[in-house]
Length: 84
Image 1 (cartoon, one colour):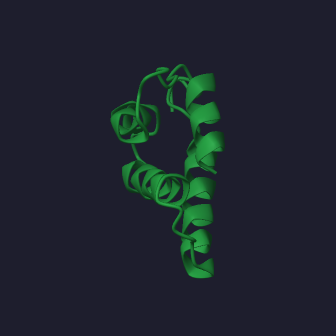
Image 2 (cartoon, helix red, strand yellow):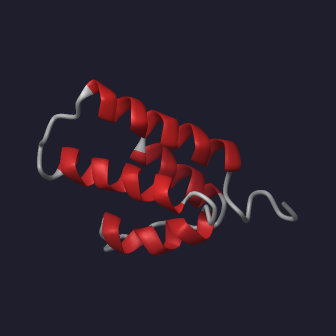
């Protein structure tokens, strides 16, 4: 889900820098998806926990992450949807 989030932001003109950590990239993601800050933060935190901490996600947490992704995806990036 985080990879898809980064792809969507990049497509909208908000790429992640090669040396940027996921937490450093949150500011850019917040600009790409201005109405979805809480969703972006939850997806990023889940990615960091899972990827770096190797903490398994519960089914409930995974469902919450998927719901956040659906909302972010529905909004799209601000640059890919000018005028909205």
